[in-house]
Length: 353
Image 1: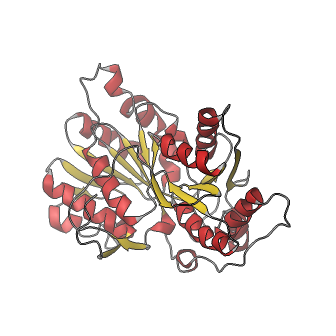
Image 2: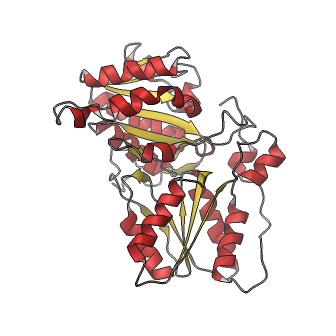
């Protein structure tokens, strides 16, 4: 990544928008379609102004018909265009699974490499304002299971910009996962175009006592947990995988080999999830010559709740992450949980999305 203009701050939304705009200027085959992309709020700011700049043929709204609109996007990709298909409620990607898994993901393989499907499927995941069981879910682990799909879930604005550009330029489908709580978070983002290295994680904080791998918004909560743990004399190494498929297990395993402890924190259920895959790959890599301790944190085995009080208990946060990490490092000590204020992005989040 280039480091020029490194003091410029953009929100996560603005970073996605800028990366998309730069690719639309670079390549006339790139277009954006989805519910609300030409709305004045521009899909939480990620598509704002694209309709005015590029016209209705390259940025347009679609009906509430997820299955149909993904079919249109796949057809366009098979025809040589580069669609970005935006799903503001990724929960309903479930109605599109046949097209996504049996058509988009497999066409390149089934036709002996003679066919490409350069398609980006963007989807918003996670909690927001009490939307409950059907509108607060995260399905990234489903897509990790499918050969032919790449899956990326950047947590930082600078990575979001590089990742959306990499996804658009990729010649086959990329599922781009965006947690709602990330949209308004700011970070330094270079102005020029750049790509994210596909399949490469980032070590955001170096440490010696425990490795904490966060996924999407859990990276932000893990960085806050790092500060809590530092006050207790615990040195945590914080890693953002960024790309969930392909997964950079080398960076994670190298860290765990050093620290001897791994805590994987996900925005999803633990059973058969991304946290289980990361944990198991590390165990397979290090078993036999490194004694390690591995734990996970994520959703309880219930549907996502609606009320704020239950949401605060259901989702991992910096305090619960720090407490679990502390107990891993100090198993014989009295349990500890830091008192932390509600994350600003959660407290201030406004719907409807």
